[in-house]
Length: 120
Image: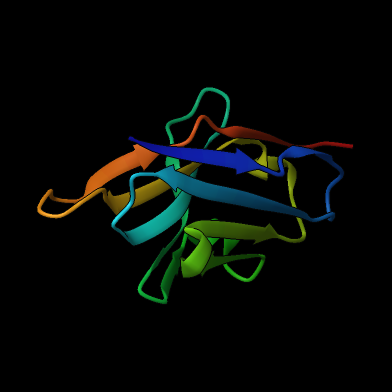
């Protein structure tokens, strides 16, 4: 069983920063990729950023403002969010592609989500 736990959400004003953290725990043989998705009110869940073997991808809307990083030793992923805008508001979900044990294939796991609200 694998569990993803997010933290770091909250209420901030436009222009401010937040740092999200996600830790994967449980039976883990290896982590292939980790990332962050978000779901704004009334919208579909979308990819924010992803990291796979050191290679990062970002949604166009967050490039230059958000930075994703990963600590392999801690099975953790972080999202540094700077210059936040009101349109960044939403529930942010941690996602991971994890091999729980050999010889099982990798599976996708999701966290419960953490709310980020950017408002005056």
